[in-house]
Structures are given as structure tokens and as C-alpha cells.
Length: 387
Image (cartoon, rainbow, N blue to C red; front, top):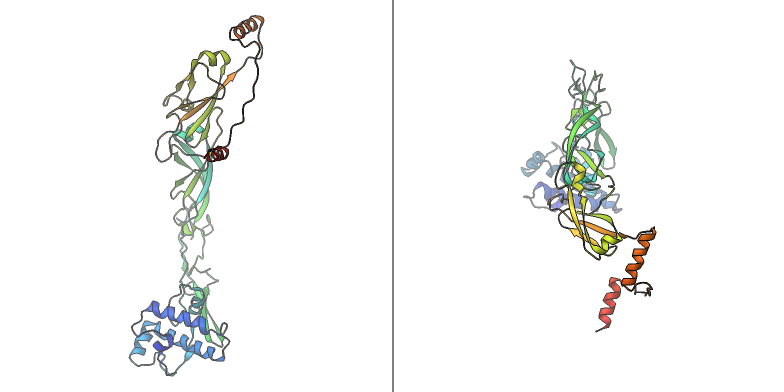
């Protein structure tokens, strides 16, 4: 074909490799016989494939620009053989390397990074709030000490694969109406590694790693909560071939506390007081969450129960909650007060209560119903209806 290759692809003579590749992909999608049933499409597809084969190869392109025949003969078209990878790239946007022959990836490395690992750790609420250091036992893949990770029995070493000669891939040629299509597949003999281990290590069977239990120390920062994951870099599974270890993630589960409940960085607790204490007022000394840890921090706090305190009322104590995971600013402690009414009275206690009721004019009490609390929506509706 006498048509200029640059004109066939619709690019200028100074076009770079990416421009040429994009032009070929566009034309290949347009003229591929599986897409375009026009009888002329097959010839057009062969022509643009041939042009791309020349212009995508720097040596062939240079020879073509000087007026020479890059194939050392007449027009060979697609029959000279072109990369099936380039056709797949045209339709699927792959990253194959340009060139007349199929460009493989080469042998796969035996040494690869290991997978990340995950373990779950239960801690107490005080430990989650203020931090703790724990010793853990983990079962993971570790580097084989017998072969130092290379998989070969000591005194031996991997050798080049005789089938692929170390390439890790073998070429398969198939003839079609497009000409010879060459594809590269992983070598079955060496599984794509390019080398074989004639005498595998007896400890790891050639994998370069074995499973073992080991101990490690993990520092849980203050402020963690349920589901928080602490990352330990390079403490996960050792990779194949003794490759670098992945990361270990410790997922925190916080045990339920007998007294305190956590909501964000706030702590909530409930305290019961006798009816007389609620009526007269009192001061209660109660333990803090830090008291679970022994002698660290503030062990108690004073709760001022004002005279006339009603059941269900709450008192907020600033800064006695949980530290923030990132800010370390502590939340609050919210204590709800429940007033206990005595259920059993002796004769003297009943006499005194009746005397109190008489003095307060509460011997006969008339009950009254109160409207239920309105929702936010109802309050907004009432507010707007007044305007």
C-alpha cells in the first residue's frame, strides 16, 4: 500500500507515541471486522494495524521516515505478525507496550508483600478511655529461618526454567484472517516465575514462610471506641518468598461497664437517693471511671443533690467523661438521679409521714393530668400558626 502511514492513522509526522496509540485505538474500534461488517473494513483494519506496527516501534519508524522498508521487503501487512495486546488495548484501554511483537510482563517475582491481618481485642471501658498496653499472641506466617525465605533447601538455589528460559512466559502463535496473532501466557513449568526450585526447603516446602505463634506488644491509645482499628505496620503476614510483611490491624471491642455507659465522649450513670435526701438535699461521694485503674487520676467526685431534687433530673459534671481520640479533650459525666420511695414503713415512720402530710396539707391530694410533651414538629407548627 502506497498510502502514507501517518495519513492512515490521521496523525502528523511529529506525533508522539501516545498520540499514535490513541489514533490506532480509535481506528481499530471503527474498522475491526467484528464491529464493522463492511467488506472494505477488513482491508482498512489490516492497513491501520500495519501502519501502527511500524510507527509504534522507534526503530521501524526511523527506518520508514528515511524511506526504507522496515520489514526488509514488500508490504507484509498483518501477516508479519502483530501484538494481540494492541488489539485488546484498542477495545479495553489496556496498558500494553507498543511494538510489533507482543510485549510481556516478564517473570513474576517470587518475593511479594504479605497480606494484612486482623485480630479482635476486648478491653474494659476504662482501658479504652485512658489507653492501655497489651501483650498479644498472634498466629501469622513468618519468614522461614531454614532457607531465609528463598524457598530452596540450604546449599541449593533456584535455577532458570528450561521451558521459558527465565522469561516466565511462553509465546503462543495462532493464524487467523488477521495474520499471525502472538499471545504470551505464563509458563506452566515454572508458574510464571522464570525459575524453578529443584530442591525445595523441607521446612516451608519452597514457600519461604511458615506459620508460627509469636508475641507482640500493642499500645491502645486513649479514646478508642467499639470498632476502632489500631494499625501495626509490618506485623501482618509475611509474603511469599519471604517477602515483606503486611500490616496487622487490632480491632477494639469495649466490654460493657457495670455503672457507666458511653455516648460519644460523654459518660452516663444513674444514682438512687432516698426520698428524704432528695427533699432535704445532700452531697454524695461517688467513684469515677478512673477508679477502675487503681491509683491513676481522680478517684471520686462529689455529686451535689439540691434540696427538692425530682426523680429523673440530671447533673452534668464537666470534664469527667472520656478523652477524645484525637483531641484528648474530655467529655462530660451526666448523672441521672432517681428518687426512691420507701415501700415498707414501721409504725413510727408512718406516723411521722402522716404528720408531715398534715403539716403540708397533703392528706387528701387531688390529682391532675398534664398534657403530653409536644414533639419538635408540633411545637414548630404551633409557633407558625400563631402568626
